[in-house]
Length: 458
Image (cartoon, rainbow, N blue to C red):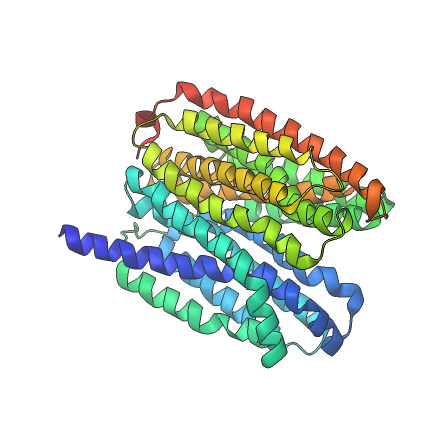
């Protein structure tokens, strides 16, 4: 019986790794192919929206799929997510205009919302507390590997076949992931008429979409125009209505009671703050390498490589430490390491060597591997099965919001001068902000020190 269970768990994690690979590689592989796509389809003014609309759709869809997974089961909602993702992929490959590609990427991003949150929910269901961090480490390693091979695979496919195959290639992977999950995951879902929070879904989608669209325009224009103010006003009204609906709903999409669970609130706040830090690190270290030190894109990739290695290493270490130490202490150690790495960023100079920069990214990657894994396990383990999807949806939402707001707000520090001493001065201001945010996250996370492991085990 034990061997059978272990075999099924291996099949489940392999299925989730494949699904994660699809969403993780999508960003880097599409970015690599964009010059050729614009050359074929035209519509260069929509260049950034091919990437942005995918990310925006994923942010909106993440908590919705998390809640639906609680109502109808992980397996069926994961299946729907994969099907939507693959449909968007195939349509993107067939696109004849840039407008069509943006629309089809929107569909693909909705499916990606399921593939972002449901795998973490399934890990919380299938694996005991002591094994969850190890499973998270494997998932984290996929993100690291994808960041390395994505540009290489994208470039090879574009140069030797066609950019359309970066979308078509998702089909076999997605089908294998579905077959493995259906063969290995067993769950019992209560068969009854479920109440779907349509009002919550509509008001949330309206509020968050308006907010993110406004942020995107703000980032592009670098000034507050009337249309941006109008979008933020719609967002404010939409989110206020959402909170009002959720407080009175029988089966709310995002139960507000989750935020009264201290461990989840702390993890979500930390996830938001560190999401800001993460996106700034991954965008602006390569910008420093190329714009300040004058090295080429290859060196940018080399500088970020240690982060892809130490992140999964940190996750694996967390899996071992969770058995022995309070989860709050582990999370705090991770935040301390990230803060140390951000301090290292402020020491960058025009003549800083590549090896020093690689050491800094290695430190930051280790900190994120420890912190993100411990936060995820905290959220997974703080609620029962019927709330785990919504809880993970809320956590993934906070991380993604942190990243989205982070790239918009930190971009306001940058002038149009993307080279030399002016850029260096602007980036140093961003790096100082990252120290502040990581330190606030550390203080927030230290509150978890009072919570022992037993209190979050499920």
